[in-house]
Picture 1 (tube, chains in turn purple, yellow):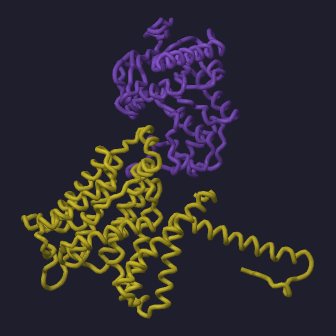
Picture 2 (cartoon, one colour):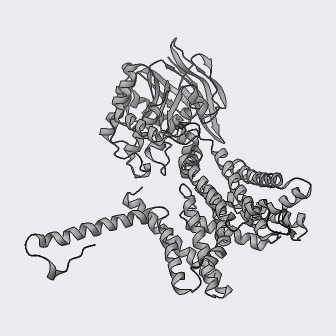
Picture 3 (cartoon, chains in turn yellow, orange):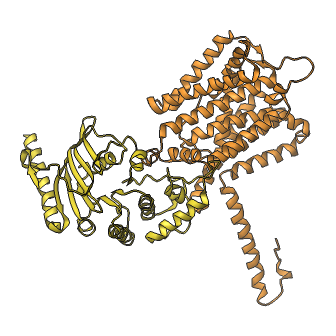
Amino acid sequence: MAESGINGEHVVAPTAASDDVLRVEHISKRFGPVTALRDINMHLRKGEVLGLLGDNGAGKSTLIKTICGFQKADSGQMFLHGQPYEPHSVDHARKLGIDTVYQDLALVDELSVFHNMFLRREKVKKPLPFLSNRAMRSEAREALDDIGVRIPRLNVPVARLSGGQRQAIAVARTVHSEASILLLDEPLAAMGAKEGALILDLIQRLKEEGRVSMIMVLHNYVHVLTACDRVNLIQDGVIALDKPTSETSVEELTEIVVEEYRRARQAARAAGG
Amino acid sequence: MAVETGSQRPPGETANEGPAASRTLASGAWTLLKRFLTLREGSVIVITVLTIVYFSATVDNFATSANFKTLLPYFAPVAILAAGEVYLMINGEIDLSIGAVYLFAPFIFYKINNGGVPLIAALILALMCCMAVGLINGVFTAVVGINSFIATLGMLLSLEGLTLIISHAQPVDTPGTNVVGGLTTFARTFGGGTYSELIWALVVVAVLQVVLTLTRWGVYTVAVGGNRLGAAEAGIKVRLVIIRNFMLCSTCAALVGVLEAVRTSSVQPDPAGANEVLFDGISAAVIGGTLLAGGSGTVVGALIGALFLGVLRDGLIIKGVNADYLSFYLGLAIIIAMAANTYVGRVRKGSGVG
């Protein structure tokens, strides 16, 4: 599955399955002098939970933001349900059924819980487009109850809430949308064990329903092995490993990362003379 | 409130209930007071009421209907200017060109009307020209990426210069006002009538407050000011929101410029006066509880901030305060009001009162 690239590093070539909902081929992205993504090849099957692992700066968030329409790739192509997919905005991607939980959560501290839950998806009345706050509040309440997160008052600004509660709101907002592909960039980052378990339960439930497919950026190998069907490891702007979670282990994943550090150290030493 | 003294207190267990009851009452009143004070507009309302009480008590002819009419032009135009500025300040931007637009609008109105366009159409065209000024401000800020302080400072200077050029630095009579034998309907509606400016101010403030709290425009304005990256990630078109608010702000300033020109029935090419208008507008917004940092603000607060500035200026003038002291006192008052707002803001954050 993995091919050998230059310097003995592993680069996964484009792969495909018959039931792919999303395919990413040869995607690259630079920010000025920094190359964030070199050559990303990745696919997501229907109903699958794909775990994305990688070091800080490996390009995980850049990849997520490229798929979700927040930024454009420099080269490469993407396919959504077999059709060429070139999102020109977050709205566009959302219309096509892709929604995102960002690493920074994209919450507005000054806005209430339910305004945040419906940010850019506000419910408005007719004929005058006033916000239907009551409808949004009750629907937000349902969505949060569904996950099991306790947030007593929904009209307080989210600035007042704990990190875990904020994260739950961001996850609930995306899960509650009509999207068929969810991108979750570290959905468990700010959470304690209890709240994290709620979110993992939710993901398990979604997986059983089979309606949505997910790409999840995670840091914790145990979470990856329990919650995901397959794992992709991103290193230095390329996917270096692509395996079903049933065929890998914490030890293997750790070994690959240790190997990367060893290589990087050698490269640094060689460069230093 | 029933506060019992020791001698009247009956013996036994009720002796403990008395103070307890009054304590809950007192704490209830305190909670209520705290709730009011932590309202975004709470502190500016208190300060304004205190100022009015002070002047009513110390100046003989302050609390009269004649003086109320004198007060109106000090306050109503500033309220409209501040209302537009509040939107930008919530965005985390600022528009320094409102004074220049205020100066420019009546001249362009005069020019268009002189070209043979009827009054109302000329007014609408003039407002649209000024809306275009806002568009330029917005494009330079949101698209080109110039800091709005600098972009609108440039606009302030160039537009004041342009006004002097097209007017040859000569005042002109405001169109529609130089009619012998009473005010025309046009003049009465657009600033000439005694309460015309007040009504405009109340309508503009009411509409903009409703838009701010009850529509997507308002929510997006807060979102862009509170978390610009997050707003963009959520799919909000950040640039559009900012440009739209610059256009709104310029249009408000243009409306005030025309209203004032009609009220005084002449158009004065006076950049110094225009700059004072700018300071008043921003001061009113800030005193009203809108943060320069963005993310929060209130249009109603700006209206009360404008009222506070108007009352203070009017009261000091009637009191016979030397003109040299006027700015000094105004400046002090603004700083004190701001300090109160900041303190209250901190209390609000801590108290959990929305």
